[in-house]
Amino acid sequence: MQTKLIPILAISTLFATNVHATTFSFSTGNPDYRIAAGAQAGSSVKEIESADDFLLTKQTDLYQASFTGLLANGAKLSDIENVNVEIYRVFDRDSVNPPSGRVPTRNNSPADVRFLGRESASNSLSYTITSLNANASAANSVIYGINPLPNQTTGGEGAVYGQEVRFDINFNDPISLAANRYFFVPQVELKNGNFLWLSAARPIVGGSGPFSPDLQAWIRDENLDPDWLRIGTDIVGGTTFNQAFSVSGVSAVPLPGATWLFLSGMLGVMGLGKRRKAGA
Image 1 (tube, one colour):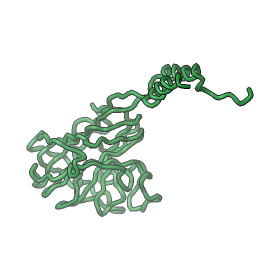
Image 2 (cartoon, rainbow, N blue to C red):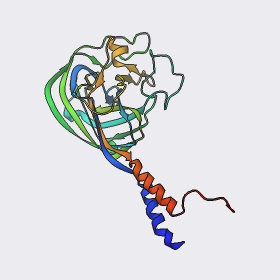
Image 3 (spheres, one colour):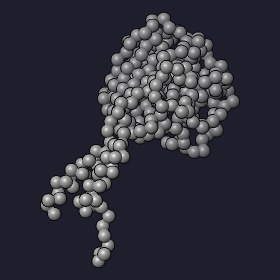
Image 4 (cartoon, helix red, strand yellow):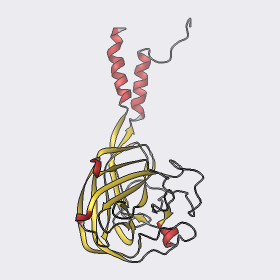
């Protein structure tokens, strides 16, 4: 019995580490400046959540992210107090079902409540800010016109101007996610003004990562919560948007099948395979 102990432990270790890691990255590409959507935590300003989706085909640990937007309506770098990143699953996970009926649809929307989150205030994420353009603009915006049925289609609130900035995020507490589709929801907490998340091309141009289908961007404020509206289809009308962001990390990939055949053969040789019936 003792002579089998070491090989048994060795094979057990191999089975316990039956995956290897590969890098993962996804990006919607650069901003296209078609729209800027509210993405700010509520303290001194109105809370608004905007969401865009990404797809994981394997178990993945996210270590970094980025998103690009405008500091608008008087907001300055010195007004930034906190940065949040939340992950939502797709409705009807983490949600009341059937939904309230206050919006045109919840099909392919984010869930009612977040799945998990990280924030700079708790030191679960850290960030750096890069100023890209002191005088940038977006052709349209959604900040205050976030209304339930029947007044959801406002057409947007028109052009908006501000300082274009990119937030580069490090997750000090990595985000571990199973293979699935998720929504990325960044928020910037401000003392003054608005943070508006810039759109990116849809379908994705110059981005990266597996993506089919590519869901459009959604938005809600504290009055619409827990429901969501599609920024393009429901609010602006006749169009769709992505938002400018990226996520990256490490995915777990199973070992090749040949490795499993080898390990299975070893178990058989050692008499650890299927037990015989007594008396056989």
